[in-house]
Length: 263
Image 1 (tube, rainbow, N blue to C red):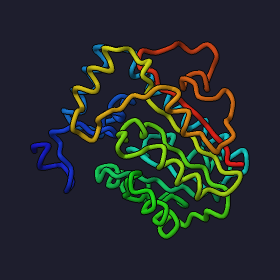
Image 2 (cartoon, rainbow, N blue to C red):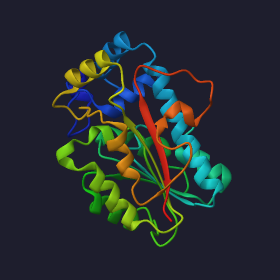
Image 3 (cartoon, one colour):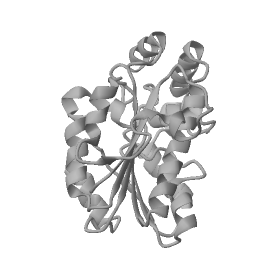
Image 4 (spheres, one colour):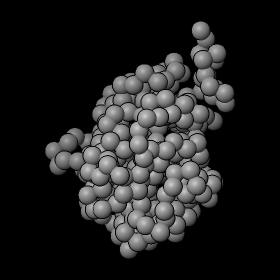
């Protein structure tokens, strides 16, 4: 069967998709040939890109664990991607089985897979929503995910913000989410840095231009502005591997990770 015939409504298998490229880099099978080709071209320039993907994944899980150990029992994973174990709910609910997790993604493929794989998981809600429609996802998190924004919440935005273009105002999106969050809440995010190897930047931006996987690399100074209004958690805004271990190697694709707490 042709990939176009297998694709859910609204999905174009001829164009790369960020969630599916990431799924391929993590070793998953929920991706199309076009996603594999984009990933392979990135790997040809920077062979350690799969390592970077795993560092980002481990940063996400570290942030969830830290938030849960701090007493947060509500989690919103924006740009959740195709479920890949261990997932956010598994980490959070290992610490407190009553933890509530809302997984938000704008890709119908992700939505379908999440429902199929996690339909029996208690306290987990999958929502189809776009971070650029911030008010809408906040309302859906409340009405469908039963998130109480009067209580602390951990908002996770890993591997998403570099797909939000400048004219879509990523800093304003974060500010809107921050204003909704109760004191004691946590924000954890990643972002592609302009300090990435130049050939990788050229290859990834060229291959994804005009698709949902189009990338906008930004300076650390621009990304640091997303933490305005938060207490920055040490070690601050640094490559994600520096959150995990002092001895992990640098990579050609530089992904910055930051965590902030709302005072």
